[in-house]
Amino acid sequence: MDMYAKCCCLHMSQNIFKTSAKDEVSYNILITSYDQSEHCLEAIDLFLEMTVAGLKHDIVSFTGVLSACANLFVIKQGKEIHAFFIRTSHSHIFVANSLLDMYTKCGKMDLARRVFNQIPDKDVVSWNTMILGYGMLGEVDVAVDLFESMRDSGVDYDLVSYLAVLSACSHSGHVERGLSYFNMMLSRDIKPTNMHYACMVDLLGRAGRIKEAVEIIRELPNEADVNIWGSLLGACKIHGNIGLGRWAAEHLFELKPKHCGYYMLLSNMYAELGKWEEANETRELMKLRGVKKNPKVAVGW
Image (cartoon, rainbow, N blue to C red; front, side, top):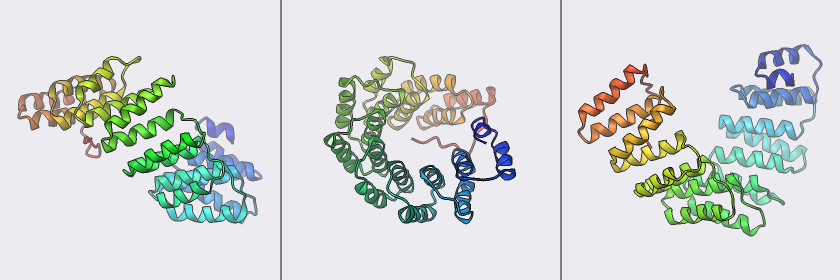
């Protein structure tokens, strides 16, 4: 079962499960496999089936089903499983972090904070999840306070910690604070990934400091990716910088030639500036490359 599931042959794993004697391990394999696929509902059903079969849930069962609840944003089932865990098991950091992930993804930061406060030995995942959660909801001051408290608690920052706080600063316009955290990262010899650079381009771009954002791209130690160019294109859209917007779009066309959103965004930029000929040329380029407009693609920033 485990071999087939890891080789993306989930139907074969299911067949073996149905025709074999079942124990906790076989249930856990399918629960975690369903959680990592589009079958998250089946993961919840299997978790409940274990109870009916008289089998005992363990850490793997709980983390798998809570992750499935987080992916489905089903807070009711998640809370029921949380209550079941409290009644039947002792506290465990993996399950506690899974609860944090579920509650933050469902936007229930009050419940997440309650779980967080009850964790005796918080690890870096616990702190990162909370910082990301508050950042996503725009509660930047809380996210930054947690970031500072994390250091005071003796837990070392990792790449995700910096990504979480930089993202929070970017979406709130805290430019100087974001720059100071990025410089702190560099001073500690923590090598930024392209996602960190994309956050910095986004941070500066949103604030209209597009030249500084371009300077970061030109000095990158590696090739800029879609996230970095996308952040620059979004900034250019907001501030009407068609020259740099075209430059960013050309790189995006090379990296994602079939993504209609970038063509539409550039075309709309031209249209807003009254450059109808260029707008039409961009749409013609879409047709020439066989790129079809997808109404579900968001082209905003």
